[in-house]
Image 1 (cartoon, helix red, strand yellow):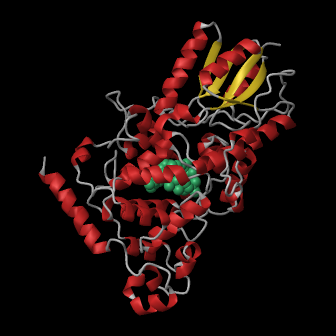
Image 2: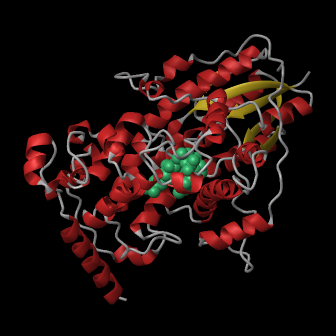
Image 3: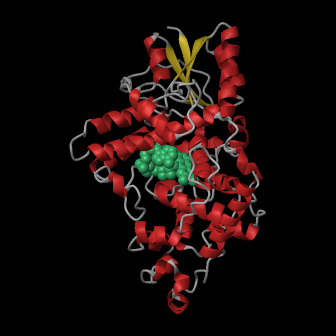
Length: 474
Ligand code: FAD
């Protein structure tokens, strides 16, 4: 039998794995490899939280492969050199992988594909991550979409079911070398607390992804439309890191949800699939506007007067010490658990960009380091949306009031009490705005900042003034 390389990247699964399926369908022995080379991702090399996740996900993939007679061989990059060495050493006739859409990776992969083909090696890539790849949907003029609603309308108009592929029952493996290196030598989890993410209930890997999906179907799906905005409840799927690492295909999720469709669930399913649509839209934008992780999507904002970076404000925000409880609770959730609820991501990002007028890039970088689901497309979209600098963004002049939002979406203050135990004794509504009850706060929450680093009214006015200055400068 001939051999083929199956190059695993952010597609750490065996079901719905088109690269693996291609090797098996061609009757080739799949040599399953992962090549670690974060430097190839340039300025956006994965942060520690995502790398810790990757460690456990790679371990899970290796275990699944071994249970089927194969194994994962791990190498250190550069990717192209490793692949070419393996092609020569293992008599490889084809290399298969699923596509990624980060600009630096797209460029690298295109170069590798060209080089392999020039050497007479069959090189083929597949869609493993999206319902629609970034170039599949285009406006009437043939250009990319910049606004979500028409993008999603086009997606629904072109909807088609993807074929589901079960994980192969057995997978042949190459006899003997090359072995690669041990996963542990990559030192991906933080030495200080390697199991932190497992303690927070995360289960990286394909089985964990399917478990999260089942839990969602049994629970939060019912009432998702309202529940998705409630950080004090388990109202969402928490599938984001599983999707980022490709432990489950989005079309598998959609297919599982469709089996649940009824009059009672239909609107919740539609709402959830629409959120998957935002993930698709994020990839669409990143592919067509590859400069946007670092630059404003809307170039008008290049002239916006951000406040100069202020270490004191940035540190308060990063460490959850701004004095605005919902923001601080989110920032603590992020640092401790590697994840933050979407509503709170919006509020924390808004307070940074609007009230503190710190550049959105500062926030995007911090999230990048600390999110287990850190994803260049979704993070860029999320930050530019909140900052008002992005495609189809919330207008800059719409400034969230974090207290009103907290009262609405965390009505009993349970989310805040969970992540800020120093506020747990403060009754509601003071828990969401301790400065409004200073005596109570001094007595019951002495360790929490007495007032916000930038007051809500003051910050809002300064943000609007900066916006008006930009609008007047046209
Ligand atoms: P659910 O509500 O269960 O949604 C299901 C899936 O849909 C998610 O897993 C995710 O893949 C996708 N999705 C949902 N909302 C969005 C959205 N607004 N944009 C893109 N995809 C979405 N998401 C990331 O995956 N990685 C990031 O780095 C990231 N950074 C963000 C930064 C900011 C400032 C903001 C406002 C949002 C960011 N998001 C990011 C989007 C969103 O917050 C998360 O996808 C969501 O909270 C994940 O939780 P969930 O899986 O329980 O979501």
